[in-house]
Image 1: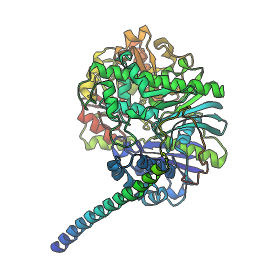
Image 2: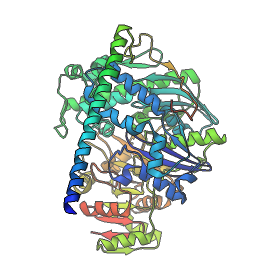
Image 3: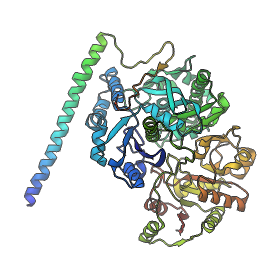
Image 4: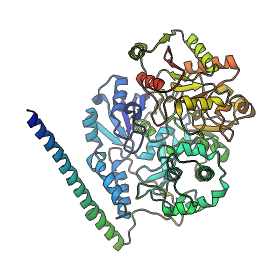
Length: 72
Length: 566
């Protein structure tokens, strides 16, 4: 019984490590392909995702979706 | 109708429950988990809220979430795209929780508290706006919210009237007064989203002049009342550290190490920072007044915790009245979201006539007695409140440090007389005694005075209108001469005090205690500091209080009607 328990424990540890590795690789790919490619396209089309300078003041008209059922 | 409001995943998670327009319970998750500023899903705070109504999760009609997660996620992704590839570490660290659960509040509610009903989402700054306007005594007011960041907004302005809150304008991330202050907080060696109040305290020791020009380069105030950060001085949009190399070069000193010595230039930078923040906020508020021409102001967001700033608002702007809720920060968003949805769905306002911050858990005498016996502590039970109060007032008069645990825990970051450490304020030594016995905190930080409200004008140079927010320790005013002489332990180096004004209706036993002390000493002021040790959340349960009492050198623990001597 104790051997079986040991095997289960070790296999769980291995599974966790494999899960963490898969997650890391996936996130890295998202970063490289998703974020990186978008950044490249943004550069080509001179698009900025954060407005860091405002020549005429930084107020914006508030236009948020007031539908509280929506997450956006 | 029952509405449960929740806020989480940034800092200070919390839950609040409203039944038929009345706030029944509210608490921050940190008090239950004992993790300071806990930002995890507030399972325990929700359970407490449900228990207080003796209901299960599915008896709640609707859950109100304090922000719109998808818009926030959009902002985070935009930050990552803009800063690719130098933000690699931050992306790996932050993106996983977003993909696993932060975008799926419904699923988390199902898994954590077994709730399968409706969930509604309110814009972060609208939650802040509701948390102040709906609980204010005003029918119409300008509403201003300023914090670190919500979804995209860092600052919003608008007007509240009757049931309606109309936000008109906003300033977007990365231009943020909250993050501006937090960045300098980390530069000065303190932690962001935690120790900004320490910098506020430190500022009183410094002279802003040597660094005034430096701050003019960092932040620009525009003629339309807005402001703009020079992002060359900040890295918070892509890195874990907040000040950039350029900021360090600008000041000419390295980032102060945590627990390193506090030098004169640290004090001067803190003073210049505080001054610049005040200047920027008054700039916004004066513009808001010009726009709306309303004399009442409702203010919220993390920046509204800056009580030095708050105390100067009415004297530096045309507003006549000011309201800030007991918890204007993100935790308070839970209450704001719940009240907003209640009003949206019923068309009615929340009942705020007898609004007070004592909304946390309370414990019965037999539960407390059991805990005291479990710890083998010797105690005396004094059933008569008058005698209890009189005995405690005597102890305070005799320079004893008292752990005072009564009734329901406070909502918000301040201990307001139910989870407090109390002591005499008559000698400066008391400050050192409390620090040595219990708090062990930085010596530059002041202790706060609690004062009978009707005596406030005798001791403080207040505005002609004293905001109800002074009851929640959100205002700092200069002491008058009599205060400097009679209660030096609560006078800060600049002669000011972060007062808590007290009326009997809010907390009768606490009021009677200060009154009894006044009868014995002719002074209506004592020290009130939070019942905790440095780095821990304020105590919540009798067990937390007993543990804190045993770990420190508090002389007496007055827990409900039990007096425990060490």
